[in-house]
Image (cartoon, rainbow, N blue to C red):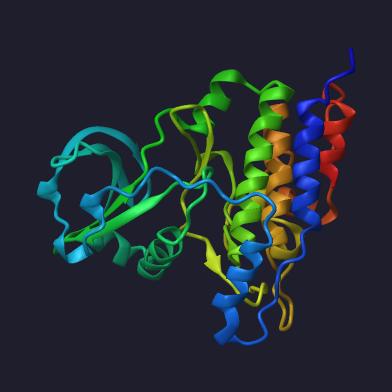
Length: 301
């Protein structure tokens, strides 16, 4: 009986394909949209659509209001938002409702960040990217209507398990590679890939969320410092001198760090901030011996 290819190798191939992908470079700002369409047509496998957008949220944001939803249990809480399970009353559509308080956004000076999150995420549709169906607001709050990820935060599953078996980790990484390839073709750089920003759907599938630090960058070059230190690549830690920039490869570095954390149970650069930064710049990485050769190769690519 022929030997079945390991899931680790499948994930390795997916990640390698992602790294080798040449992103389209628009000739002018006016041709960005057409170049994105051309790039998507070049995909060998079309992206499967998510569940159809409910009729209730096809209405303009001005027609949406809180009374249209039954609010259920809290699902999570962040620095600027709370997320609740919700049901749209007319059609019974289940979703997650993220509530952001305008005064907190103003105090944190993140209004532009939220606006960017809405603009980017509402235009994405991929099985492994959390869908933003719509939004509305009142005098005090902004409400985001999000896809409900039934199995919650991946970080909690990882914490409970300690670390993932390679087969499970490989499945997750292959899905992450597929989602990142899609984002990069759309000229979107996430910039904050980490377990806390990944959810699991009802069938256990990956759902990349939290696009607050993401950016639409047709030029593929950025200079802003952002993200989480443990997952930052060297080019985002070295002082950003004039002319120094980075591109979508920052997400690929984060994918390698994520793979390490899945398999080992902790981040590879888990030290005080100053030491962590130095180790990242030097790529000072040691992979435990219990991690397979294939997985180690994937991490170090």
